Structure formats: structure tokens, C-alpha cells
Length: 564
Image 1: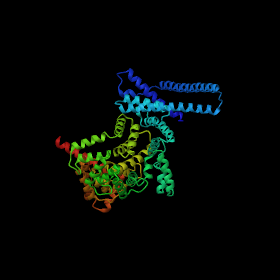
Image 2 (image 1 turned 45 degrees about the vertical axis):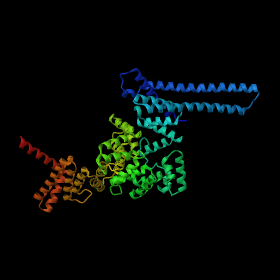
Image 3 (image 1 turned 90 degrees about the horizontal axis):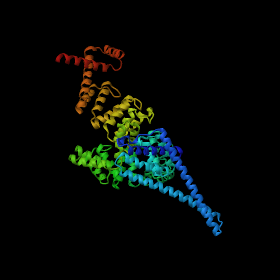
Image 4 (image 1 turned 180 degrees about the vertical axis):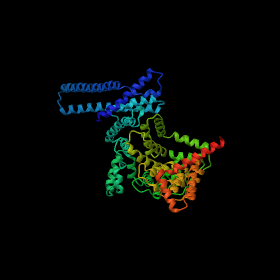
């Protein structure tokens, strides 16, 4: 049923995990971290041959049992004098079905045992034991166990990351109707990890519903594809089918909020979130709270934000609880209470398995396993976690990952910085400006860069954005040259952050020195133009940096003479 290569990958993981557990039992000095060390290729080959021989033996045993069963039936038939070929076939089919059922039941039992061990696990050794059972169950064709093993290959659990094998296994599972595998393939496709980059792999149903990408609007075809996806377990498809329900309304709100397939429209998003919130959907209540908290399409209103966050938190919405904790920690919209904030933060940490995924992603990065860390952060980013979006973008722009082509890293990082900026991350907004300023992952566009710096400066009072914007006004890059506004922005940057004092000091020193030289030396307009052109030709377009360096050198010389 499944390709040989997938079986080999599963068996390799099984062999590695079993070998590691045996090594732990025989060596007390070995740490849990070393429990996942890979065994040699020869040992793996020996283990694989052993497993394959075992499978052959099982096959022979089944054949013998079938033969014995057949003989018994024939003996009974002879005694009774019944020669019925149809009865023989039915008995043969019955034996086959029974053997298959026993095989399936054993796989299910192994999977349940693995789940039980995993839920009770407190260390890496116990988790490894759980995956031994998953591997055995997967070998018997258990789809849920195969999903677990595919995830292990994708995320690099126990140092066994293999994207190609994971994709093959997911593709095999997708054919069997696994919606988790379909989601995983969609996620990998959206990032171009191990397969062709394709953000368009959403749903044919959505395309027919809104009539885009060259397709005519066709509600019947849309319904057909949504029903097909819903049958496979797609929650999104189920939401679209029941468009009038809370989940569907919330989903439509998200489409307008993030601009997925439609232009960004905060007014429409607000309308759908309000309708879904009225029906008691906690995710919609959270989205309303976030819009009022961040001022996305509405005036900032911390009291309304608190109201909706509180409503959503009553249903256990983790992001709503997180933002409530943030409001109590900072005193925004409520009386500041560190104790309440800590309790709420603790509650967030205890919600869901995703918190563990953040930790495993972080430790994978610290240990130098960049690819594993990126895949885990990227998955969390797709789930909408702003921290994961920022971390994924940071890893991509460092170009340390090996699972993506280098030319794809900056465009993907820019996409993730955009998503983080939409959620109110000021640093991400400045990053978008930088990407447009330097032409990373997009064309150089000073005007767009200035727009993003302005947003970060006005909305979040970012000192870095103010400094960058001041420099652009000073030199007239993408905006009209304005020395007075440049001075003011430099001063505002220094007031916003103590870290900006020194760079602002040197920037203002350079600006004032240049203008002093202009006033003293270049009194004639013709002479002034000629001299500036000569400076550009002699020292290059970055001569102003040379002036800053000269000022620094003069200051150091004066200070040494004074205190020497």
C-alpha cells in the first residue's frame, strides 16, 4: 500500500530509537541528550534486514495458517459430502479478512500504547520509547502512527529530520484521505520547503466561490470542492459550507483582515468579526479585542479591547489570555497588577501542546539545528503566532537554513515580516522598510520604505524608524528633502530611546558641519554645485560617512589633549 522508501524511512527511525534505548540501558554515564545519537550505517542495515526477514516470516506463517485452515475446511466438506466452491471462496475471504483485522487491531493497540507513554513521558528516553510503538504501528499500516512518524521526519525529532521522506509519507497518507497530511503538504508548499513554492494551494472551492484566478464564479462547483474537502476533514471547508455560522463568519473576517484572496478591508473584517462574536465564537471575540488594542482599522480603545479579550478568555482562548496578561503587566486599560499578569501568563503556558513546540524550536536553534527550528517556527507562524512569524523571518534572512534555496529566503522573510507587522510588531514594520530601502526580496523603493518607517514612527514611536526617516529627509531619498524635519526627527529618536543618543549625536554633528561648510565655503550657487559634484566624484556617494569619521577623529584628538 505504501512505497518502499517510506517503509525504509520508518524502519530507520525505529532502528535508531531502539538502538538508543538499548544504549541507555547499558550505559548509566550517557546523558539523555546523547540518547538520540545515530548508529552506524552497518548496524542500520543489519537491523533493516532483521525487520524485513521478520516480515517475510510473518507472511509465511499467514500462508501456512491459511493452508491449514483450507485443509480443515476441505476435510469437513468431504465428511459432509458437500462440494461447494462458493463456500470455499467465502471461507477463504473470511480468513483473509480475519487476518487483516488481527493485523489492524494489533497496529491500533500499539499506537494507543505509544500515545499513553507519550502523554505520561517526562524525559527524552520515554518519548523515544513511545516512538518505538508508533514505528511498529506504522509498519502495520496504522495511518495515525504514520502521521506521527511523518511529523517526526519533518520536525527532526531525535535528530532524524528528512524532509523528502516526510513529503513522500504525507503524499501517501493524503491519498488515503488524511486531512493532517493534506494540511502538512499545503504548509510545505506555502513555504517551498522540499517542494515547489505555491501560495495558491488553498482550495479550489474558494476560487470558484469568489470567481478568481481565471475561474468563473460557480457556486455548484464551489460546493462540490468544499464537500470533497470537508469529507477529508478540512475544517476550513466545513466553515465555508456553513457560511452563516460563527466559524464561517470569523473565517470571512480573517480573509478581509489579512487580505487573503481579497483586498485588505478592516471595515468588512470588523463587520464579520462582530457577527461571529455575537454568536459566541471566542476567536472572533479575540480578533475584535485585537483590532481595538492595536488600532487596526478602528481608534485604539483599551476598554473595548479588554472587554473582548475577557469574553474570549472565558472560553480558554490562549491569545486572549496572553493579551489580558500583557494589559495587566503594562497597565493599559486596567489597573496595573503584576500578580494577575503572572497568573495569566502561567495560564497561557499551560494551554495546549503548542507551548512545547515553541520550546523545542528554540532549543533546536540554540543547538545549531537550524532547519528543524525553522520548520517548527514556520508551522507556528502559519497558525498565526506573531513571535513565530518574527523568528521564522529572522532565521530566513540569516540564510543559515539549508532546506530552502537562498534566493527564496528574502522574499519569504519579507512575507513573514509583513504578517508580524500586521499584528502590531514595530520591529517587523521597520524591517519591511529596510527590505524596500535596500532591495532585499523586492525592488528598491525608497518611497515605500519611507511609508513603513513613518508608520513605525507615528504608531509605535520607534526610535530606529525615526532615525531612518530623518536620514531620508536629510538626503531627499523617496521624499522631499527637508533639513528642518530631519533635525526634528533626529531629536525625537534621541528622546524615544537612550540607545539612540550616540548615533543621533554624530548624525546631527555631521548635518551641522556640512551646513556650516556650505555657508562658509560655498557662498556662490555655481561654485556650490561644482564643489558638491567634485566631492561626489572624489570621495564617492558616501562621502558624508567620511565626514562623520573625520568629526569622530577630531573629537578623540581634542579629548586626548585635554585629559592627557
